[in-house]
Structure formats: structure tokens, C-alpha cells
Length: 205
Image (cartoon, rainbow, N blue to C red; front, side, top):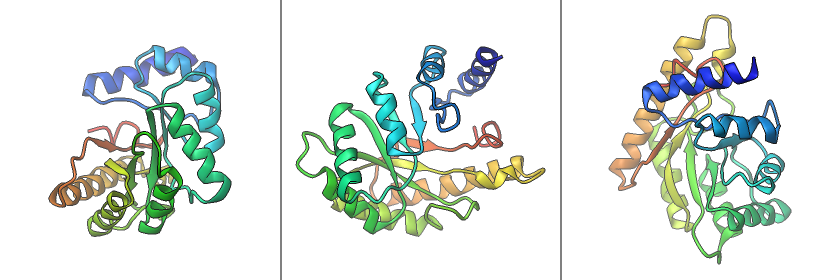
């Protein structure tokens, strides 16, 4: 059943020409992640520094920490070590202050850290509200020495009964507007990342 589920989602994304980075926060399993990667996933997504450390230690070299961590003190040092270990480590940000804190944590490294700006599509948990705010956070990140790769969202409001389709459309609409704002500000938007379990297909456009 596990392998069938992995193959089904990978097939849906392959048919759409979309890179898949499944979230490992639920299975928390190196073996499951390896099966997902073997099936064609580009990398994995995690929700905590600890999760990232486990998967990186297991040799997985494309890891996106999709949560805006306040990178001060020990957390900052742990993030810096992850960044130094693999070139494919990326982190989410959703505030100018958070971007500056993250930039300070990884300053002096051999290469700049890549980040994605989180956009709130209606979940009201994390993420910036609107394209103007996304542009402001991206500019702060650039000034802090970070490389802004694009935007992402989590359509968690899709868990409400009957809300999966509309939440997916919310993600697409919000991300397209934020990406346009970043491009207008001179950023090369290479990644637009969407999806929660309910919206994994409705946001995949």
C-alpha cells in the first residue's frame, strides 16, 4: 500500500511536469524517504531542524525546511551546520526580521543560503499576507545575504470538510501574485511550491 501511494502521487506530479518534494513530517522515516526519492521525488520537505538533521545525516542531499525558524543561538548554529553539509538545503522565511536573523546565522559560509518566502493562502498560521509583503521580505532576505529562490505556501485550511479544491485554488492564486511581485522587484523566481495533503492535486497546476 505504501509503495502504491508513493507511485500514485509521483505519477500525478510527473504527468503535470511538477517536481515533488514530499513532506516527511508524518512518516519521519529515512526508509520511506528513500523510497519516495527512488520513485522520482526531487527531494524532501521537513518541518523542524531536528527532522532535517536526521535526513541529512542519512545522506539525503535535497532538504527544504518549510517553516520560518527564528535562527538565533543554538538553532542558528544548527541551521548553519546543515547549510554547510549539503548544498541542497533551503529554508522558509516569512518576515524581514526572521530573514535578517537567518542571514546572520549563516554569514561567513562558503556559499549563500537559499530561502523561499512563505505566503499565507488563507490558512492564517504562518506566511506573509499578500504580494507586497512577500516582496518586502524578499528584499530583506537579499540585503541579509540570502538567495531568494521563490515562494511557497501550505494550504492547511483545505482540511476543513469539502474545502480541498478551494484551498488549492487559494494556494495557486496567492503564489502567482507573490511570484509576480518578486519578479517585478528583480528576483528570479525559480520555485513556486504548494501543497498540503488535501490540496496535493488541486494546487498542482
